[in-house]
Length: 251
Image (cartoon, rainbow, N blue to C red; front, side):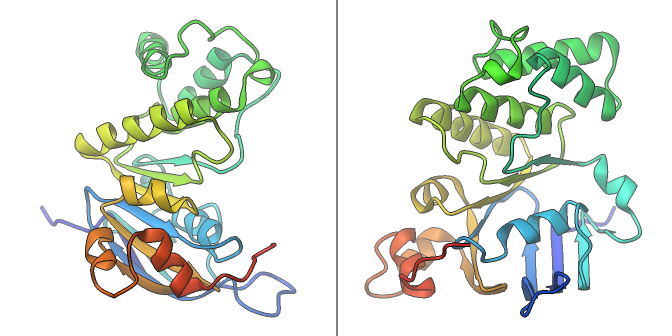
């Protein structure tokens, strides 16, 4: 049986209607299976656009994407069954309970009956939310919403998990629970594609990274190797600032 990388991206271009410049301008990446791959960059650099194209939410203007060897334009349905997506925005119905949200989302992935109920209960327990399943999502704290948002993306046990800023705006305890779980999930074989601008978190979590800016990949490699490669590189944040500059990005 052929062994394919989790993700293969070649010369990806995305130009939004009416834009002066492309949001992505020739992005190429290979992510081997089993990695926690960090896509890092300033606001407006192209992180979310890239993630959305890899997930099949957006169509690229040009270029190619393969997920586990499947070409995304031709095999969208097959790809949907092996990936999980945790978007930056909370993708839950605020007027439904956590259980109602998760049962609805799980049914969309083909889970049903006892299997679905047990999987929802298992995930709620893993994230310390077993007592809050019958509460409306709109009553949840920001950290609780983030944890439910993550559960929604992993209910069907995907082989590849896409995370777009999964810990933005939450408390330290919720962030720690999420990071610890992602490490465990990866150790069990799940490939994780993780987008963030939190450098300390990425350094702690990621086995490999790419830094994107102005729609282009500026550098990529393994964090420890990159940190030791140049004088003045003491951590990922120093690399990030040297490469992308200190100019504010108010997009």
